[in-house]
Image 1 (tube, each protein chain N blue to C red):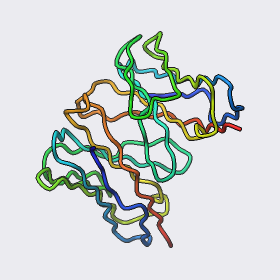
Image 2: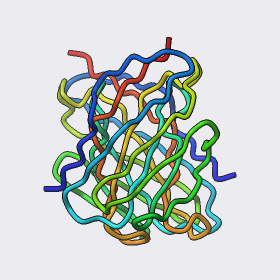
Image 3: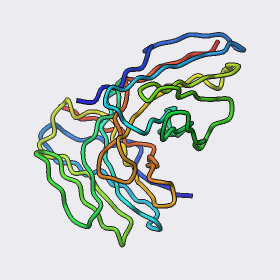
Image 4: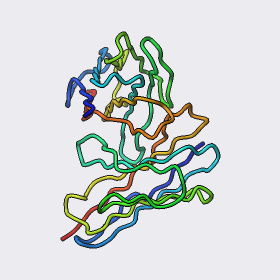
Length: 111
Length: 114
């Protein structure tokens, strides 16, 4: 299979920094997406990585290491509205360009 | 902005009924997807369509069928609904497979089968 592993739950404090990890099988890797999903709402796109390194978008950054099969989403200056589920999705050459989703990480931001 | 619209946010049906979930996208995307989302199981692909009248089974197609008669509309059909199909159903669209564009999701349909 193409197991994608993320922690199930994380808790952090408002104003802090949190890192959400995602590991995946490297064979056939062809891109990784991060989505945010608030409870009862649609997932929305946060970031895309296909080459090694860090992609920064305001308070959110995403990192990829292809050789290690590892990515993380870094959220800085946490706000209460960042409480949501964060989904890691990996695209494989063997899956005709479709993405396989991890189970998601539920982040709770506390005051 | 891409808009993906699912016909119902909440739906309650009875065991054995035939159930239709509708999804429409307004950006002329080639690809459309139906997922179900369950606690602890993440997003699982039910069916995928890459063109009008073209479809491909996903990871969990059993008990479902789909229809794509027009490019903008992708329907999910539960032929004979069962209680284990109670779930959140998400539709998504995507312009191009393999590119750097993300999928665009609808708001979901929370379906309860009694």
